[in-house]
Image (cartoon, rainbow, N blue to C red; front, side, top):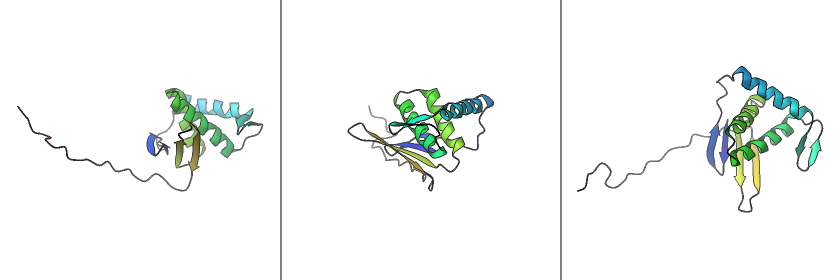
Amino acid sequence: MVVLVNGIAELEYHRDVPLPARQRDYLQRMDEEMDGGIPLDGEMLANPDLLQRARYVAMSLVESLQQEQEARTAATLAWLAERIPDLQQVRVETGEDGRVRIELIFDRPLENQVKVRFPMSGAGETRH
């Protein structure tokens, strides 16, 4: 699973690497907290379904990225990847007005990005 911010792959989660027990416990605590309800789209949802929880966690992921909170970023990324195995991409777009749009993509993985190398003039040359 990959998180793209304004078209650039910022985070990647490998589901084939098992989570340590303490991280699994933390995800469980996140679930328990959301069982008490979550704020979403200006209202409080008492019994959020899995997709509503995913939207809420994705918003938390974006906030943690913006605030450079690495532990929270890792936890929210892990929650999305582990709790929603069909999720392939989280696309985040920030507008010039500061608004953030988040799209959860289930039907297509990110295609490999290709690194392009440009020849540098004078590379390898020594000038005196």
